[in-house]
Image 1: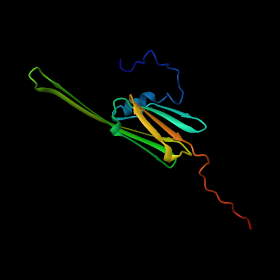
Image 2: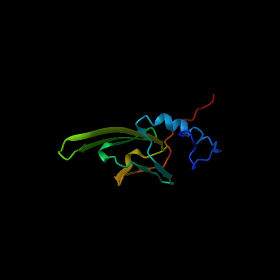
Image 3: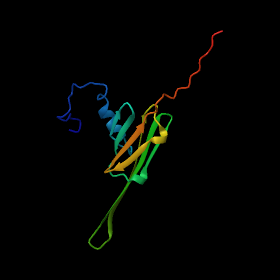
Image 4: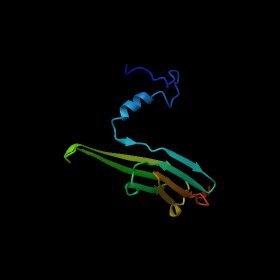
Length: 142
């Protein structure tokens, strides 16, 4: 019975984004890595990135901007200990997972990036430079 298709799946959905879901989900469920949900908006003056990181402490989040790319990495550690009525440990469980993701944000002003973390959401504002940082040279044809 484990091979039955759940009712909420469309068996005729062969879109490229869904066709391998079952295979990848079964393969990657054994890895302790997650991809955070992200909202990315671009305005004329900045990029605004909101990243869901529930259950992660601010101290365990690393954020860098290099070569027009915003890099995020975070580590989440959990420990669950259950004791009996006498205070003896009956069960202890520990888990650790790493989250990483990167976002290509060209022409960002790395000196004025701002980030804050509240209620499990990392909010990052990357202002754009006024001019595009492309070095070019006019070559004389002889």
